[in-house]
Length: 70
Image (cartoon, rainbow, N blue to C red; front, side):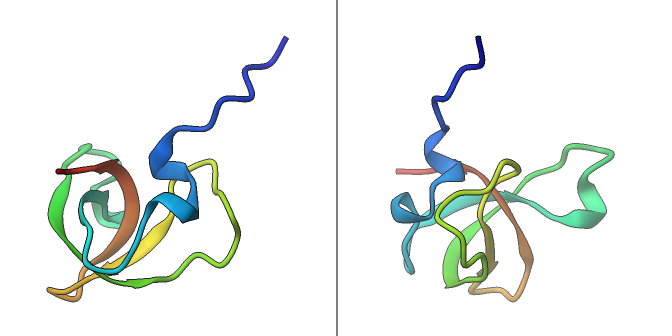
């Protein structure tokens, strides 16, 4: 049986402009390095995405959300 639970970082409704998040940039996928910042724009249109919601941070970096920070 497949687990249908979706992590919070994979649901668009949990991410909003101004939220502090950790993202994985495309260039860092092999190394696993995360970048922390504040969401400026949400780029993914779908309600959820298996690899995380794509966002642009205030510093201009683009990546998929891996975790939501307090």
